[in-house]
Amino acid sequence: MKKKFMVINGPNLNLLGSREPEIYGAENLKDIEFYTSEKLSEFSLGKVEVDWFQSNIEGEIVEKIQQLIGSDYQSLIINPAAYSHTSIAILDALKMLNIPVVEVHLSNTHLREEYRQQKLTAKSSTIIMEGLGKRAYLFGILSQLIK
Ligand code: DQA
Image (cartoon, rainbow, N blue to C red):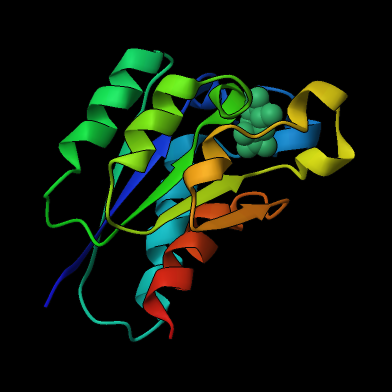
């Protein structure tokens, strides 16, 4: 049976590659999508479908999360980006899901500014992964596939 994953990326992640590359790396989101699917196909994990969504708009992210309620997605991998630190709306939407939520951050925010230390959205995540760079999404998906 096909296993379906939704990946949601929040604000400014559409500019990965050119945005602070010393922190977030030189690859853009399309490169990371390609990297993730290439690596996934190297493992014999059966049929895995990964759908990617990015928005700079909080309400659009909330709506995408709401669409997962009662859907056939097996897990959500989410990098809420700056909304992780501020968004009760995204936290509340995540609370309505009954599938595992893996929150990922490319950088290790623990080593960064004070205002990145609060993670509202992580309060309803099953797993949190930080500092993996472009491998974040791959490892997030693998965390759900490998028992
Ligand atoms: C980020 C970390 C956030 O603090 C920041 O606002 C981002 C990206 C990360 O992937 O490291 O936009 O989520």
